[in-house]
Length: 287
Ligand code: GLU
Image (cartoon, rainbow, N blue to C red):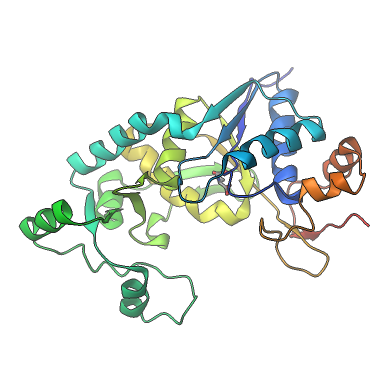
């Protein structure tokens, strides 16, 4: 008996070309949908206007076609801006969002973090008197942050299902008061993606385990906004031959370069399909 039809998605940001890690993720998501007779959604996460570039969009489409992947729906995240703003307005109306005027340097200094280390926002602007926050917000660009402790208290205990980890209890405080939006730039990844997964009817989110922590927060956002919770498949990450995690800035493992070297997309896809989704991070190289 076939199971229910899945709706999966691949959601690249067009800030560079795809590398083998993206290809692995896209294949897993695509095949999950195809096996179930469901749908595979390609969502171009193009909301970061400062970093996204149109030529990368066409490059991503060409790379996926080279791998032999076809999609049922192509979405551009920037087109959902009104929906993202409405979600933000709801969180604001619930008293769960506040303006933050800190620069990166302010935050690092307040958190006492060494230069370059990941920083959890220490909550500096959370306690600003409302009148002062409003006056400053009207006068200067700022970020809008989620008051995560308050939001988590309202939502109560939450969990989600992960293909590798099983039932996971949500710990949204882990990333601190995340940025929901930047005034001038609009709603950011965390909220926009949670809203769009629900809007697209995604039943299965397939993505690398580097985004595991994001799920803790997105689960909370789903609860606050009354959105359905998909199943999650956080898969292993692929590493370059020297053990580094693949990154867009490393050109060597981009699909564009492999293709230019004369490799066949079908052969690359077949090799990636031979790697199980779960397990420790593993090396990949085409020599
Ligand atoms: N756009 C994100 C990225 O390229 C992925 C988002 C997701 O899969 O949730 O890293």
